[in-house]
Length: 285
Image (cartoon, rainbow, N blue to C red; front, side, top):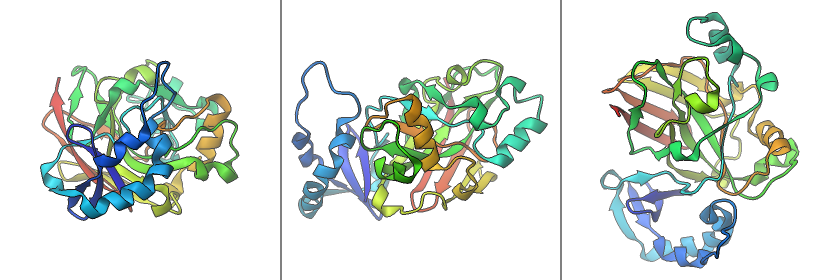
């Protein structure tokens, strides 16, 4: 099932070229009291909501997909966890391009570890990317995103995919330079998530998904998740050794080779097999 948030955070299910409004199930989540629980409560309750969502589809109001505004499919992620240089070909291109990639950041992921991005940087696929520091080179990075569905700590890779609620397309927008990754990648609008969440039961193997990215029609990145250095399950095992993962946490799994600069006026088009596609405009702040 393709689950989205649209317009004024209505809950929808995408079928073909339509969005079916199933917001009637949202009261079933309940109202939490302060101090509020960790994680995104829609994602936490999603398994229990699925039967109600299926029932609501029978009477749901339908909207043309082209007429709605898609929001990030996770409204309240507690953490955005990202994997650097997690494709060998991207690591190779970074090693060769000494003018663009700081030497301090060109190491294997097992040595570098993961990093966090600010949740305030998350936007939906219908929102623009706004270039925050126009005097600096700013690059696109397409990524498969795994959305954590339940609390996880010290999870083994063999069990890790059972902790995934679904998958989405991500753009990890990146300013090049010597600063720490979390700073350079956390500007407002620099974490694109969309167009929807595809539930994990629809993607049995996240490690065999083709992906492409073009800018204004020029193909820049074309790869397959089979080429991940650390796959989704291994990344969850790695991350859960350091963090307690909560429902709605976003795991950006890394970008393949072909990263390049973007500028105001550009349009970034991304597609990941079995998930869908997004088209994101780049604007000046």
